[in-house]
Length: 120
Image 1 (tube, rainbow, N blue to C red):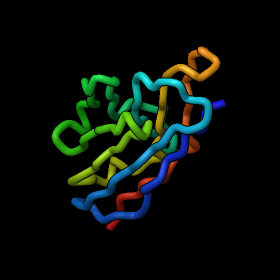
Image 2 (cartoon, helix red, strand yellow):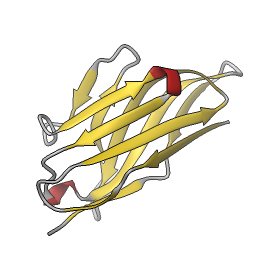
Image 3 (cartoon, rainbow, N blue to C red):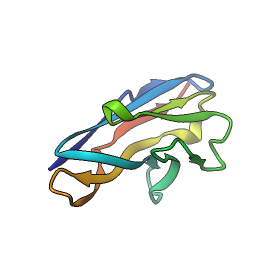
Image 4 (cartoon, rainbow, N blue to C red):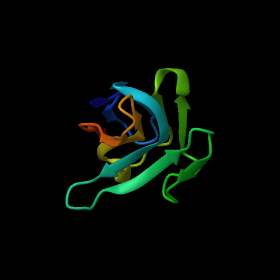
């Protein structure tokens, strides 16, 4: 069983910064792609950024140049550094981790979500 837990959300003013963290634990043998998604009220969940085990990244156009995704492979952890936050960045942010368990099964694990609110 794999557990994925996010942390670091909160309330910030427009133009401010936040750093989200997410760690996968439990029966994790290896981790492949890791990513962040978000869901604003009344909207569908959307991709924010992803990163492969080798470090290749992909970003939504709306966050390019403001957000940076990174990971620590030794700790099965992924980070999202968010700068120049805008009102429209307000959402619940979810971490997604894909990999292989110690039982040699693939897993696709979601965290419980962390609220990010940008407000003056």
